[in-house]
Length: 122
Image (cartoon, rainbow, N blue to C red):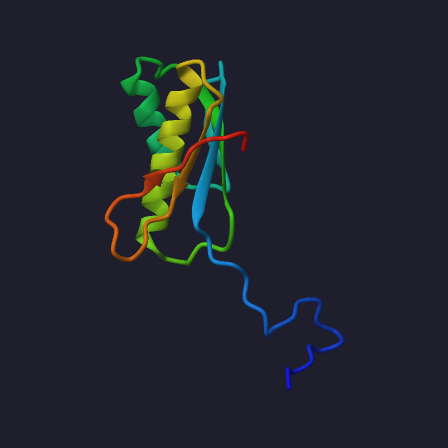
């Protein structure tokens, strides 16, 4: 028999949220030399700055939105690395005339690097 959730609790404690499998980053460039990210990630902001200066556009700024398709594990280093790589690829895409988005799959335990997912109408 399945336990009943409390009548005062809006979330069923017996169901677990889906684990994240991919990270999506969207970059919107701006003329103001200010870099922001939502949610705030200092490592993602540094990745944006490195990519912009590497492309010779260090005077530009922009905003990055980082989302995932589930609940990422807390404190996992591979999530932070994947977010930074997705932001860097989104910045590169936006400055080269693309859509400014990037999807990266989170690595499994046996994999070393995140894999790029195709960006089909996402």
